[in-house]
Image (cartoon, rainbow, N blue to C red):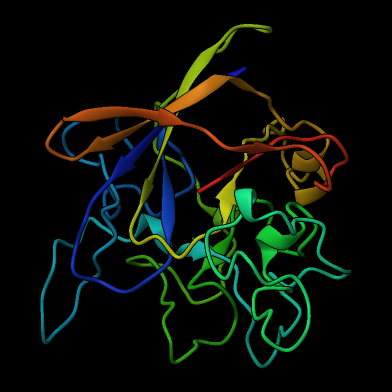
Amino acid sequence: AVIMILLLAFLPMCSGHGQLNYPPSTRQGIAGKTWPGALAGQGAGGYCEQPNSENPHNPLNGACMLFSQPNIEQPDVSIIPGEPTNNDAKFRTHNVNVSGGPNDWTRKMPWRAPGSAPVLGSGCGVAGGGNVRNQNGGWPPTGMALGADAIELPGPEGGPVTVWQVGSHVKVAWGMWANHGGGYSYRLCKNLPGRVTEECFQRTPLRFAGNTQWLQHINGSKFEIPRVTLSNGTFPAGSEWARQ
C-alpha cells in the first residue's frame, strides 16, 4: 500500500506538470542535468525550470517535462477513447457540475476515465510531451531531444536504488508545478530490458493506505488532508486513482 505525500512549490508559472519525488526516479532526465527527486532540500517540491537565454534558470531542472500531450502528429494522446466514467463532482476538480452536452469541456480529459487514455513512451513519458512542440507549452528536459522516450536514459551510475518489501506500507511523493486538476495513481513494472511498457505498468497498480495524504511545502511545513480515491470506472478495472 502507498502512503501519499504531495510536495508543492507555489511559483508564478502557468503549466500543468508534475514529477516523481520519492522514491527518486532514475528516468526523469539526464544525470547531472536534472535534479533527482527528494522529500526535502534540493529536488523537493515542484521544481521544473528550464534554461532560457532571456531568463536563465538553474540548468539542473526540467524533470516534469517528461509527459504526454496531444499534438498535430499524435492527436489522440491523453484523450480517453470512450465515454467518461468519472462524472461525480466529488472526484473532479474543474467544471464539476457539468456531465454532458456542449459545456462539458473536460469530457475527453484523462481524469474522466482514469487510466484509459493512451500515453507516449514506455510508461515514463517522453521529452516535451510529444514529437511536436505545442505553442501552449512543452519542451524537453535539459539535454534531451523532443519526443525522446525516458526509458532510453541510462540512469545515474550507482543508484538511486529503492527497496520495498512485498505487502508493506511505503511512503511516496510527487511534486506539482501547477494544479490544472486531474489525479494520480501509482504502478509498478519490472525494470527488464525491452519489457518496460505502459501495458506492463497497467498490470500492477498499487493501492493507497488509509484515507489521508499530506501537502508539504518546499519550506518543510506539512499539512494532513483527506484523500479522495476512486476505484469505479478506472482502468484497469478496480484500480485506485486519487483526485488531485
